[in-house]
Image 1 (cartoon, rainbow, N blue to C red):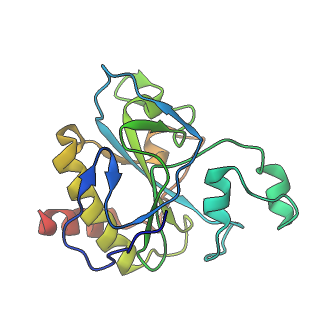
Image 2 (image 1 turned 90 degrees about the vertical axis):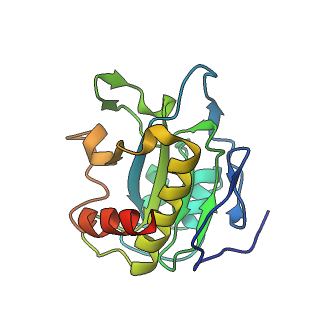
Length: 193
């Protein structure tokens, strides 16, 4: 389902776990959250497919389980993986949502935060189209901060629990990497608040 993507929006609406006015591509790579589990962690990731290349539909194909192993030699090693994120923020700021925030996306893998394992159980995963060492775009920072504000409004426990994938899977993951400007993101988050 394709909706108009508001790249310059100052406010996002969330209805039944879904953003309004963004591209929705429902993934089957999710599971229901335990109804007694509160959403209390926002995890920032990065992804590019093939690695270091931007644009195209390969990331969506990957999260939807449609990645063709013959499209790039790298895909032969990942096309059978069943992973997803709640949202992807592309280089131009467009957002694609794959999994309802009320459900568990499969983004964190083996992970731990504040003495709790299995971060997928209580987190929301946002992917930025990027790499550890290529700067992210101003549109991505703007959209991430606006999306974060909407998520915090809907799930207040996220307020003080925003981390990188590297923070919950140290030694295993490095994203969003040294190129992610946490100071810029937090300043925009405060400014939009």
